Length: 256
Ligand SMILES: [Zn+2]
Image 1 (tube, rainbow, N blue to C red):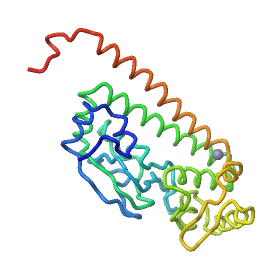
Image 2 (tube, rainbow, N blue to C red; image 1 turned 120 degrees about the horizontal axis):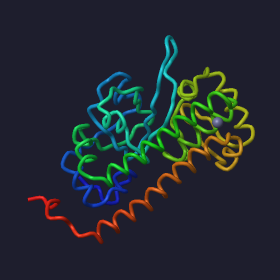
Image 3 (cartoon, rainbow, N blue to C red; image 1 turned 90 degrees about the vertical axis):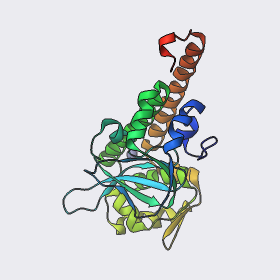
Image 4 (cartoon, protein in one colour; image 1 turned 135 degrees about the vertical axis):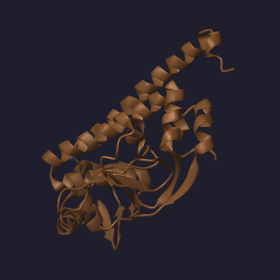
């Protein structure tokens, strides 16, 4: 399976040596909208690396539809945290927009992390960015108006899939934990301003900059945090790689 130049960010950031660790156990999967990759409480047996499409992590409470927490497209990894901890899934992983992914067994993912400090560090950075996104969503839900939250979700989706968002208003309402009629009301307002155009079963973003102006600060905060995590991590990795290259290899470290 090809990894070099892979559209999945995790795989593309892994070094050639680390890619060789992952490659033998990688398998391809088509993800279909509405498919559940795993449900809350499940043992996570597979770790997914999306190449296209979009997955949302959701949670539900009694008698309420599952609402969205974080989005993962080709910028992330699904199931990595639970697989690393050998812990059951704490939320559902639902395919929101169909696409392709690569998966490896959780046991092979743990093996790769144990074998390579670099890939372990890479996984920690992705987990950190994911956690930041979840925390930002919790704060956003508690403090910001539904229109700003709606715009944030549209921007997050736009960044991962493009300007045409193939989702119904009812689905977006469930993600936000609000009624469909509330999403319709907000959409009509934004459509009047020329920001977007609603169609049957999809939303077209017409003016991304205006959408960002209607959004709360949460979008930029999560985005800039992720950027910081990866820039800082890249510097550490460059230093570690340079140090490893400069240091003599002890005889005991050479695999016989
Ligand atoms: Zn917010």
